[in-house]
Amino acid sequence: MGTVVYQNLVEFLLEEGDKTEEEIVEEAMKRFEFPNKDELTHEVRMQFIMGKDFFQKLENEKYRLLKLDNSPITGRKAFLELLNNSPEGYFDTRPHIKKLYDALENKMVAGL
Image (cartoon, rainbow, N blue to C red; front, side, top):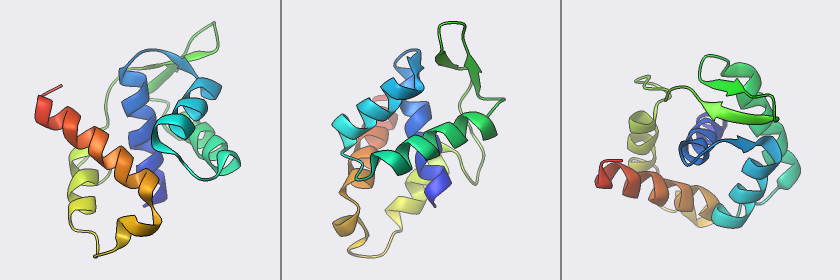
């Protein structure tokens, strides 16, 4: 599930505006309390390598979201459904994913 978590994290943060890789990592650490900055940095970087159709790197080193992944496997709706069906206690050891889930859920409920 790791890749889907980071994909949805990057998309969510870029929906708020263009950001550098470092800004995304710092904001994820602050807002969602991801536990490992080195792992987070690596995973965010991988999203930009793998998601070339979804992101554009600008001249100022910031990234822009071109479109959301609406895939029935990795898209936001699928990600939220997967988390809705997670086993009891799943979020106990993953509070950062719970915070991301809550933010994504609130955004969907608000229709944004």
